[in-house]
Image (tube, rainbow, N blue to C red; front, top):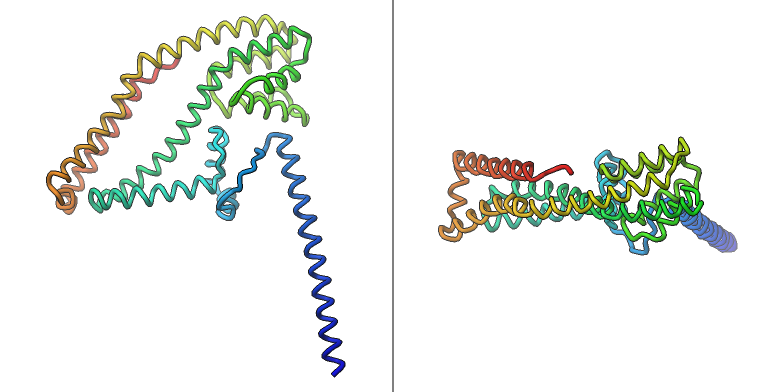
Length: 312
């Protein structure tokens, strides 16, 4: 009887030993993970956030794919507090909801079309958010140029001036300059850090500012006078862009109203004649007519948007 008792005691002690080792290993891994996050946050490669992330498993798998990397790059340029996995799940949910609504309200034929429209809308949403962030950043460029000019005139180095501007300016300029300052702090060259900023938020104004800073840093020229002249130029371009956007606001509304009228016509037709869309899309001729009309509406939208796009 003593042998089973000794075996039980031995197994229990061994299990306790493995349990203690497991807890210690988990604590060590958690500490290493937190240390890695702190170091990456200090270099601006990850954002520090207290929000609990959702769909972490999907996010890890998605980041290994080409689609996930593209989504991650776009999200990084928009400034949204979303992971690629979260955005991907929300996009699929929007596709399912719009598919169900279109198939229920209109006809089953419009379900896949609504799903494709949801995918296009998700990509358009990211581009729109990126454009808004770039626009806000461009509006802050005159103030940024002024701060850099004052700092360099006071005798500060350009790296120190960038760090000071990152603290004084609000988002998005403050956030973007913080990334540049962190990269400079870990030994990255000024050319690479500013070049990465210009690639992430492409605009003519930012390219001019980056080129001025890089050339002045290389040749050792008069940074102050260059930044003073650039500040005045950026202020004038800012006012010009505002005037152009105001003048073209009616054209922009028209571009969105054209496809809206088409969707409203479909809804009114289905309300006046219930089941008309089902009968119409039940034949090949009706499906072809719907697809052709949608293509024409899309072409009209793109043409109007192209006419309203003026590069300043």
